[in-house]
Amino acid sequence: QVEQDEFGFTIDADAGVSRLDDVFYLSKQTYDSLFPHQREGVAWLWSLHNSEQAGGILGDDMGLGKTVQISSFLGALFELDIVQTVLIVVPVSLLENWQREFAKWAPSVSIKQFYGTKKEERAANLSAIQSDGGVLLTTYGMLTSNLAELAKKGSSFEWDYLILDEGHKIKNASCLVSKSVECIPSQHRVVMTGTPIQN
Image 1 (tube, helix red, strand yellow):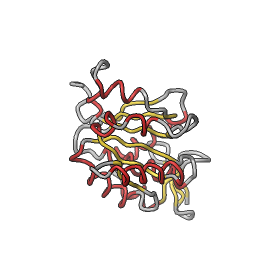
Image 2 (tube, helix red, strand yellow; image 1 turned 90 degrees about the vertical axis):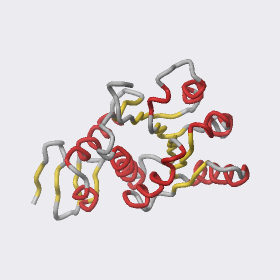
Image 3 (tube, rainbow, N blue to C red; image 1 turned 45 degrees about the horizontal axis):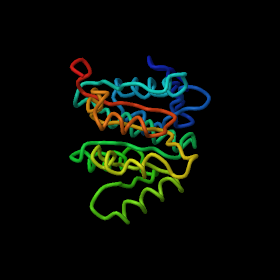
Image 4 (tube, helix red, strand yellow; image 1 turned 135 degrees about the vertical axis):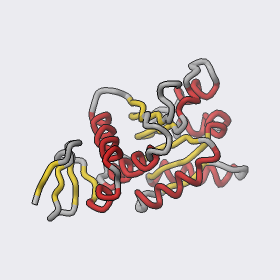
């Protein structure tokens, strides 16, 4: 039994997946757990991935599950071997929330933090993600103070995705955070904000 929803997902109950095309799909469990607007967000993120745009803004209102959309989308990309390394920059207060959401929505993805006072531990986590793949979570403060480490590993390294939570922090192009973000090499960029009109 195959049917299509309003966002372009073809629901293949026999295969246990919901496909957007010949490449991208969500597991039935993930698809069924997402609200309709979150499915629409994941579909939009995939269309953005395939466009010639370098990135976009996920501007749902606060509380509508932007973290869920990003986690489930990236989880699928990792499962399909479309991406290997992702850098997510968040306010300090949201580090643990991101850790929890990935554990729920993308449990097979390796996720480590680039945060804290132990420089050796931060460096080890960065090296592990860059070498073996996965998601590196860091903060805006860590990004600006450790830019040289996060911006490259040798001359050829490039993050597959750079995700900015509370992305209004870069609305001033001349600020240090904005300039630091510009230095991060990445194929795709997504800014998340809960108040897109104001920002």
